[in-house]
Image (cartoon, rainbow, N blue to C red; front, side):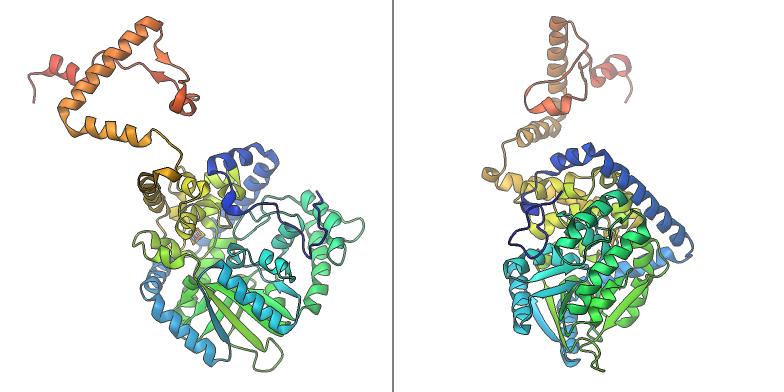
Amino acid sequence: MTIQTEHRLTPAPPPGEYIDSPRFQIGAKKGLANTQQRANLKHATTTIRNKRARVVAELDNWQDLRTAGEQIKTRVGRHLDEYLVQFEENFTKAGGHVHWARDADEANRIIIGLIAATGESEVVKVKSMVTQEIDMNEALEEAGIAAWETDLAELIVQLGHDRPSHIVVPALHRNRAEVREIFLEEMGLYGTPAPEGLDDAPVNLAGAARTHLREKFMRAKVSTSGANFAIAETGSLVVVESEGNGRMCLTLPQTLISVVGIEKILPTFDDFEVFMQLLPRSSTGERMNPYTSVWTGPSPEGDGPQNVHVVLVDNGRTNVLSDPIGRAALRCIRCSACLNICPVYERVGGHAYGSVYPGPIGAILNPQLRGTDSVIDRSLPYASSLCGACNEVCPVRIPISDLLVHERHKVVEAKKADPPHIPHTLEPQLIGVAAWVMDDYRHLALAGRGSALGSAVLGKMLGVQGFGAIPGPLSRWTSARDVPMLPEQSFRQWWKKNRGDQQ
Ligand code: SF4
């Protein structure tokens, strides 16, 4: 389990970048073969989605809340430029500093500069999707700054030299025995070791994490966070969490640097009320999350951060916004309900998606944020059975299956427009033949007669009723399917012969 950590400040993640992941179908096969992970995922997702269903059923106005969430977020998308400027004005007025980052490199440069200005060489972190998206931990490591995860699941992932596999519960793919092993092997290398004789009881594992993290909380002068929401009318940031580690990071250090995607804006504090009902229920199946932190500039009493920054990150979001259909994905509040209900995610796990955004939302968001140049991003829109279960649970009514089809269309168009980068396939030629056949009823009749004749002759010669695996480009499709011989007579021919007198 132990990976070489020499010369590093923090545990090394697995080698390679997310974007270098193989296409989804290959990652999915690896996930399917991992029976322990499948068992862990099935147990965890079943528990969470049952809890969610119970608490959602308690609310008579759940559908109205979903519609309200959808409409607020749609309005944010339409007026994002105005709300962002309003947020900047109010955050600055409250004594905070606003920085704008076009992409991951720019965001990391700003963050490193801000930490360097404090003279510190370590930060504690609240769990944050956007800092994972920009690979902040690794950028800080290269700059000689140690970033310590403080969320329990993120700590397990970091100490396990692993990657998150779920939006809300990043170590969902690990069970208690695995967590115990990670803690015993790794904690002592990076701070307070796990107690001797640690067993895998959840309370004892949580206790070991608490002791390990306390030393880091007490020492840290700088923290980084994300934000679930940024409220334009007041210039406030909001973090919603379950463990209290976020509260420690947001109140103890002198400098707080929040890294926030530009789509996180809510226009008013009243809008926040809607999301405080939608998010905890959809996410962890709770009526209310245990900790909600709201801050507007530095702490006025001097008993919290005095140096408060926010880095507003685009990193592809304005590209998403420019697509009138695809922009619906920006409504996402990262609740993970679509992951927990998805039969594909439940079986293959999050690593197959090659991104910090796995599951149905990852399948529509990644190809929009990162483009479709990589094999992983071209494959993601196909990482779904289109069963539509995700549409039903999404608290902001993102029509995920419609967006999957929309993204598939864009992948096909990109293949046509940029053939040198795409491995040669027969798909465009087959579609050309199909277009010719469908173009005219005489072509259809001719194709039917030709295929039936060819099929009959071949069947007689080979003495078979159907084909098994066919070599060449159709080999993978036919390895699990029989291709029947075409009937000698088409439906049109049958109709003409038997019912030719009817219209
Ligand atoms: S797409 Fe909807 S269900 Fe999925 S994480 Fe985002 S808000 Fe939640």
